Image 1 (cartoon, rainbow, N blue to C red):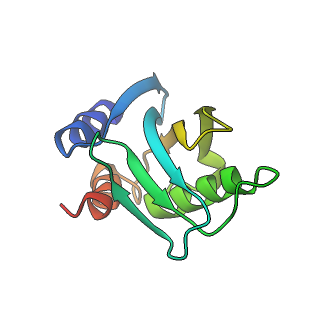
Image 2 (image 1 turned 45 degrees about the horizontal axis):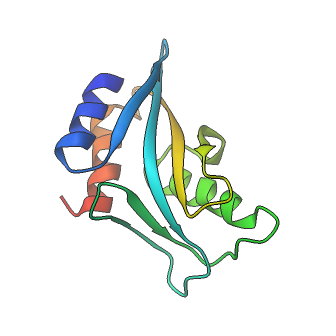
Length: 121
């Protein structure tokens, strides 16, 4: 199912790569453009396929990175513990690893709907 999710994300314009398959799902790598210190918290799709994430926390002592994990986990329904910064810990442009586990409640349709909210599809 993780391969199908990866293909779906590519068709709706989100830059993604399959990082690893697991028994219950897998890990995808996505690009995120962080916009810390924003007055409004929101998430959208950037011009080159990255997810643009606006959030209030400032990039001080790792608070922004924690906010990215919390926000993406909540938006995508994976939980903050399943969001890991792979590259760009001190940059606004990051590669994020998202751990997806497929269950009866959190199936392919569930995750597709979460990503569709970001893109407006």
